[in-house]
Length: 291
Length: 191
Image (cartoon, rainbow over all chains, first blue to last red; front, side, top):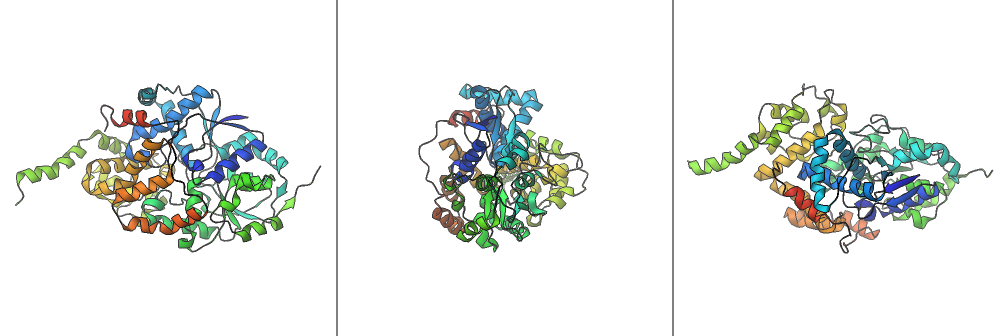
């Protein structure tokens, strides 16, 4: 299992925990990630508001690089916004020849061209469909039957493209968690919006969205997410939202279950993770039977 | 009594919008709207909007672009795509919202200030190839010309600093976006 890895900007900045834990978990599950050489920003949630063609050309540049340097490999993106932008470039350039020609006319400025041969996958898609819950369960060293986890899928891996999960009733994240025997919270806010970039531009509008997700998870020990923006929004404004709740990346919890060392997972680096939460984890775990 | 000159200046941008191809594209996007209101009922931020999404599509179809482009609604979309997913006519509503936002940035003078975040973002990735978060927020604060804005972010920024999550940008990466972005932004026929 080889993938062209697109970490995206957040994973090299405030979400380094997600980058490190993704690489560590995927390696220990037998998947090989090769970073796309010289990758650049996918346009995030801002490019589309500036120029429509820019919002396709930015992600397409990375698809063109993957096609040239890592031919035949699916692109793997752990960030939901990167995934959606790259996926949109894939879908739009395949849907209409005119769009691909327009994009390629721009990529020509860098002597690049995109032929339309790349499939973009989100990390969760790869975990559920390529690696699969059985293989994950077989690799787990510490199960967490007493840890109640709220699975937070967010928006952009579910919508608008219906690729690997049910956008109204997502189950993929829960299936991965159940492979670690985690007690998965049954809740309705798993596909609610965290406010996304409104946290920066319209803080008063984003805060109720953040609070609603945190409140809905009140029975859980922690929230698990697969998007750096969701993770940041849910943990950075907890004081303003009036509720404390650890928010982990899925790969951090998986790393703990797989027995990977803290320096590869950096759980303690999350703003919302308290020493109390870390101390409580061993009590919630059960060792896997050695066979 | 306003002179003919100032009257023309005031109406010229509106005429430009009304005749623009970009607006025509938005009209095509939402022409099939049957006013069922599923978008508004599904929108997590509708409570903060002066016009609901359903009302916005109606005004677009009725040629009321002045009202549409002056609406704060365009800046309340968090691109969650729930409206797009649920629209019974399968209209690309999130993309229509983005297209209207672009039009407002381009043509409506009042909204220029609101473009601060987006301008800063474009400058940021042009300089570094990748988003450098700390530099982006600093540029945004400067571009907004709002002295209260940085204050609102002081507490969260200190929390990030405490966990070593703020990084001043180093050298730009090997992948650069200058040529690609120049080609896109200066292309012929850019709306």
